[in-house]
Length: 184
Image (cartoon, rainbow, N blue to C red):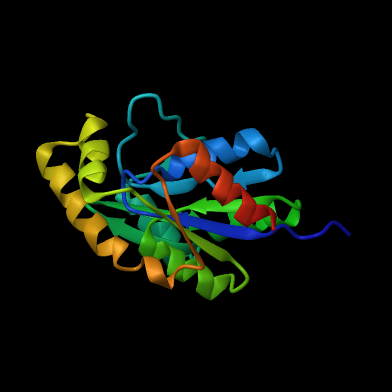
């Protein structure tokens, strides 16, 4: 019987580099897999349904909630995001190292369902850099940028509840540090 894979959660505020770090980890190890989350937000330029997210209506999202299909889901800003239990189990059962890139609230829900999951919090080097990263995307209105920054400040207050905290000021160094954590 194949060994069951492990589960890691990477969280951090919007703009902390969660997806960029995940992409860097995948380049180093083809046994790393990420679940595809479900969201009610509209796709951004270049995003593909079923690859980046499963983009669904709010009604469809709540049908999944009612059917207990999510291991966690959150309302973030004006949209909902969720992680399907079936995605995690499918990847774990194939022996993959599952990395969940999710918001802070969701990380604590994952630990309830998968107590052996390890949590990693990515921290930007400063609030000013965080603001620059969020605004620099050019994908958010000024109002959305302020909402994301406000949420980010609250999320950073939770970092001490994580198993690991990694500062993302030099991308390659950050990826190295996270990779060492998942390989130990």
